[in-house]
Image 1 (cartoon, rainbow, N blue to C red):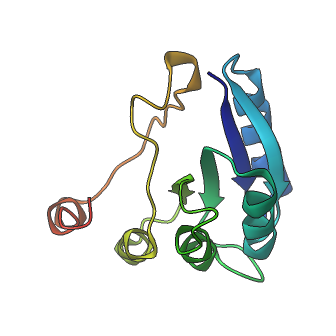
Image 2: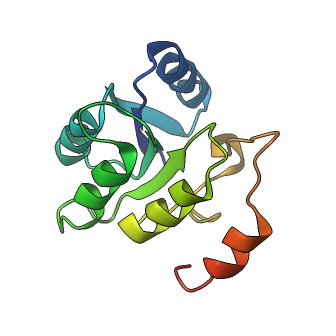
Length: 134
């Protein structure tokens, strides 16, 4: 099974890095790239990916609103969206969950498709209060 991916980040260097990492996985294929949230929604509508890697802060339409547009559209709502950020702001986590962020389940990702983050963390307050959404 090949996992189809759209990558959205306004920083071309970051986006390019994700494209290289995902493209190197034998069971993943990058179908499209976007430099802002509006382009992300367009790419998802065009390609119908399994997974979207979405930056939270982008011009035109931020990652939260792009996620909301994707998850509320019946034609695209099946996409698993993983919102990425380097900012340690709990508000982004709350807003992403409310917008419908739905990261891929383990069974969707095969070992070659797993992306590891060495410093990923979530605060205890967010973890305990977000249980209602998960």
